Amino acid sequence: MLRDITIGQYYPVDSKLHRLDARVKIVAVFIYLISLFVFSSFAGYIVVTGFLVLAVLLSRVPLSYMIKGLKPILILLLFTAFFNIFGTKGDVIFQWKFISITWQGLRAGGFLSMRLIYLILGSSLLTYTTTPGQLTDGIEMLLKPLEKLHVPVHEFAMIMSLALRFIPLLLEEANHIILAQSARGADFDEGSIMARMRAMVSVIIPLFSSSIRRAYDLAMAMEARCYHGGEGRTRMKPLQYRKADYLVYAVMLIYLVAVILFSRLFVI
Image (tube, rainbow, N blue to C red):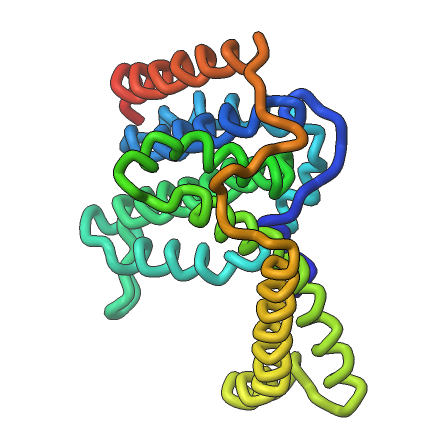
C-alpha cells in the first residue's frame, strides 16, 4: 500500500507543464485551490473538470499513476461521504429505523468528496512536474519580499524541499522494513485492528530510527560543505520567465473568473 503513495514524487517526462517556470506552477496551483472553494454548486465543477483534464493531458503524467495516489486517502473519502450522507438533516429519501438518508446529505457528501479528490489531483501535478530543486527556488523567489520583514525565506524553502525529497525515500525504506518483518513472520494484513496496529510497531520504530540517522547524516554533510543558509548563494540554473509563463498567468486569471461566473449563473 505504501507504494501507492505518490505525493512528493517527481515524474520525469518532457511535457509543456514540466518546461514551465516553477513560480508559475506554484501560483497556478494556488489559484486552482482557491477556485475549488469559491463555488457552492456542482455547476462550478464543469469548468474545474475541463481545466484539470487539460492540465493532466499537458503534463503527460499517466492518469493511472495519479489515481494510484488517491488510494491512501480512500478511507478519508469514505468517512467524509458517510458522515455527510447520514449526518445531514433535510428532505428524507430513505428511512430505516433510526437511519435516514437525505437529499441534502447526498449532495453534501458528493460535493465534499469531489472537492477533496480534485484538490489532491490538482496539487499533485505540482510535484509530478517540478523537481525538488526547482520547487525550492520557486518558493524562495516568490517569498523573497518577506526577507524585508526578517522572515527566513531560504531556510523555509529548504525545509520544504528536504521534506518532499525525503518522502519517497522514507516510503521505500518502510516497504523494505515491511518485507523484512513479513519474512520473519509478521502479519500486517490479517487479524483484528489492534493486532495489525501492534504489528506496525515493528515498522514504525526502525523507520523512526532510520529517519533520525538520515537527518544526522544530512546535517553533517551540509556542515562539511560549509552550508550557512541562503546568503551569497548562487544557482547553476536560475529561473527565468518565458512567453509561455506569462501566457499561463493570463489563462489562470481567465479560469478563475470563468469558475466564479459559471457557478453564479448556473446553480445546480
